[in-house]
Structure formats: structure tokens, C-alpha cells
Figure 1: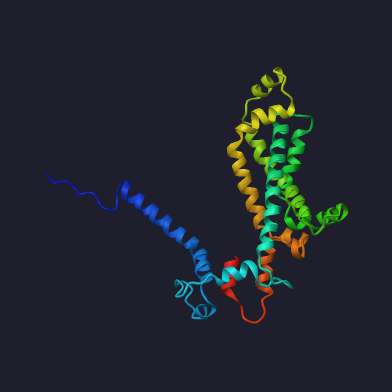
Figure 2 (figure 1 turned 180 degrees about the vertical axis):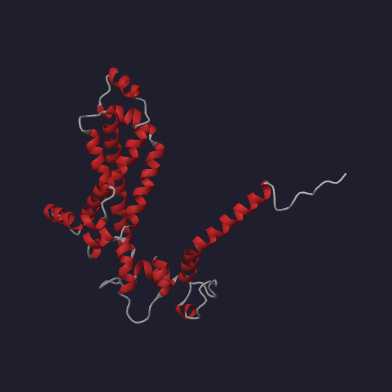
Length: 263
């Protein structure tokens, strides 16, 4: 009796291998710039001039890292990126915390404490998510000047909290929409007030959406360049502005290893 042998190119095992192989190939392509950046940051300039970007360093050195952190020239100062790194931390952490907390409260109000016109309010906040960065530069600069916090870290925190509030409200509003209204009614019968219901019932159950919101806001604020370049100057600039100034303010020889280490 003749039995047809199964093809090696069929079956779930073959397709599983093909899928994972494809994913690994694309992951390597995606991570290739990071690899080039890392190996370049540990090379000397003489070795970089040889032109082989993909090769590992022949002589590993951490001098580019030390220079980038503490002595590289950025603009008129040669103190490295350490201070600007601290600026980004002081901008990002409070910006993320405030926008997340305010977005959670807004989502709570728009779903569990509905008021006349709440749909219009949410629609306007949702519309704010689609306003381009460039549109808010002039009015935001006027507001910061009026408040007296232009070119300061608190000013940049206010900018990011204001611009991110529409997104955080959207996230929490959609998440809280699925919560049963009976929870709030039962808490009200037990005598719980506005903030007690929020901090005791909804917020402890908001772990997944808090993680999503924090990741979203942290990425947007940390990677921002336009607001940092527009609303800060000198020593109050974030790390993204400092990296740009580091590359553009180099004189004489381009220190690619220092630039890569800073990045």
C-alpha cells in the first residue's frame, strides 16, 4: 500500500519556525542602528575612521562616555549632558504623574458623575488630541510669559501636562466606561464621597490603564524636542535639545564616538 510522505514544508511546526525566523530577522533589522550606536561609542576616533561601522571595537574605551557625561561642549559650556539629563527627569516625572492623575479624575467625572454637557466637554478634549504641536506654540508662549515661568522647568511641565491631558482623559474615560454604575451607587449609599469613591474603588482597579498611560506619557515627554526647543533655553533645556546642540556645536573634528555615547 502506497502512502504519500508528508512534505517538510507543511505542518504547524514548519510555519512556527518560519514565523519566528521572520520575526527574528526583522528584530535584528530594527535593532541594527542601536548596535551601531553602541559599538561606535566604545571606539576611538582613529578606529571609526577605518569605516567599518559593524565591527566590534579593537580596543574598547569608555572615554567617549566620560566625555559625553561630564566634559563635552554643548553650546558655550563644556560640562556634558549630565545636567540636561537631570532636567529631563525633573520635567518627565511630575509631567507624567500630574497628567495621569488629572486624566484619571477627568475620566471618573465624565463616566460616573455625568453632568449636563459632559459629552461636549469630552468631545472638545478629544479634539485637543489632534491639534498639532505647532498650533499651540504661540498661545502657549504667551501663557507662560504671563505666568512668569517661560524658559523654566515648571513651564515645560505645565506645557506637557496641558497637551497630554486630552490623551490621558481619553484613556481613563474609555476604561471607566466599562465599570458598572452600581458600584458608585452602592458607595454613595454607604456614605462615600467624591474622592473616597475615586481613591478606594476606581483607582485601585485601574492598574492596566495606569501602566498604559504612564508609558504613553513618559515616551512622549522624554522624547519631545519641539516644546523643549521652544520653551527652554540654556541650562533649563531637556536632554533632547542638549543632544542636538552637542552635535551642532562641535568644532574641528567631529567626535562621533562622543555623540553616540551621549545618544
